[in-house]
Image (cartoon, rainbow, N blue to C red):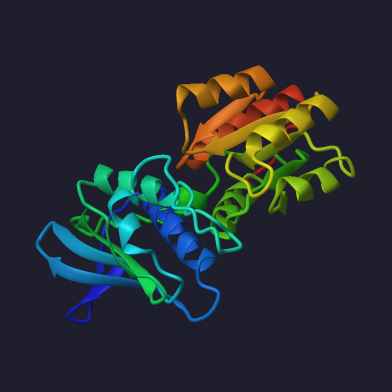
Length: 281
């Protein structure tokens, strides 16, 4: 990550997967509940020392806001504030997940919100500064090919994800493996395209609108028993894993996951389906 201090560039090391997941959840939530107005993302350097920098991150929207009575429980795991008068009810699990990831960085997620005015979520991270000219390129690590000479060209992949930021991240990762995935936003859309093409594997999010990952997985497993199903979710409770095992889901990936994890899963599928190709990278 690059920022500025006294007009001099500063490079700070950061985990791109987890920071991306934090911002992904906050930005997606802001967009979801802002029909009119704007969503503003700000990154500001607070202070700098010889070996570390304190960086402030903020996601602010002019959306419908959150009533005060819900402020105390907003970050509780697996609770949703239901906005019954809105076309997309509930904040989902995004805020609880973002809060957990921020706390894992030894920080805290704060928010200011007023119903009818908008919301702002913000946090600060203390990030190490690489020394002696050692610059880390996190995006190259996040999206670059994770193997030497191996491309998964020939594997047909369908991604089912309603979050546009998550879709973009997964799509970029898959493209770095030599894949050209098809992407849809809902279970209904997935079923419409599922049998038009022979998909070797389907990557789907657990929390989809109208038809969740459980329902979609059951239909896929019944009607297309040879398709390899990979579910990605941050909800990894034992009952969740047990339910997917009963359905016959092949793999579960815990969000946020590094590119190496999804590559390993897809490489095994490609080998099992005998579609693996070796090309020069």
